[in-house]
Image 1 (tube, rainbow, N blue to C red):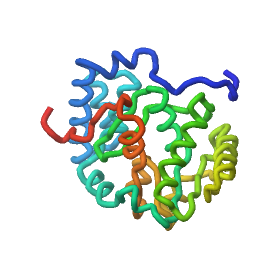
Image 2: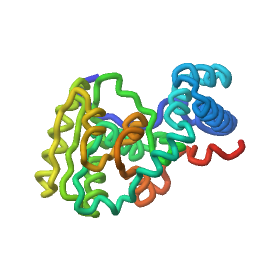
Image 3: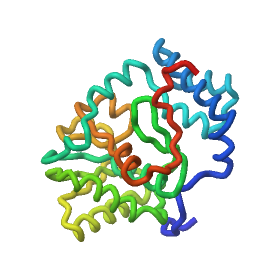
Length: 245
C-alpha cells in the first residue's frame, strides 16, 4: 500500500467476535490472571504466554490483555502520579506523538480501544515500524489540539520516533497545523523518545506503561477525549478487573 494512501484505523476483521460475548468474559478472566501473576513477580513475556495459552487467545487478544494488565504496585504508582487535565494550565508538556495520535485515530474510526487497569485509554494497533497516515489523522491532531489548548498550556513538545518510517511527515503535519492555528507547539524526531520523556522535566502525555512507571507526573487526555467527544466509542473496560470475575 502506498504510504500516502488514506484508509481507516478501524476494527480488524473478526474483532466483533474476538471482543464480545463469551470471548470478552474470557478476556476479563485472562486480565485478572495476568495481573495476579504480575503481582507475584512473574516475568512479563512468560506470564502473557502462560495466560494466553491457558485461555487459547489469538494474537490480538493477547495484545489486548498485555496492554490492559498491570501489577497492583504499578497501578497505584501510576494513579498517584496522574494529574487532572486542568493541571496542564501554564505547564510545559511533552507528548509521545505516535502513541497519542494512533489512539485518537482508532477512536475516531470506530476501532476497539481499552480502558486499562491503570485508567489509560490504549489502542491495540500495531504499526510494525512504519506509520501510515489514515483518513482520521488530520482530524485527530486537530481534536487533540482543541482538547489541550482549551486548558492553556505554556507550550507543547511533540516527540516522534525517528526509526519509524513516515514519522517525519507526521511531525511536519503537526507543526504545520500548530502554525496555522497559532498554537505554541514544537516537534522533534528522536531515536529513543521514551528515555527523553522519562528524563524531561516537562509534564508527560503518553500511555506507554514503561514510561509511566518512570516519569514524575503525567496526564491522561485519552479519558477526557472519550468522555467529552466520543461517548459512544467502542471501549472495553478493564479498569475494575481487580474485582472478582
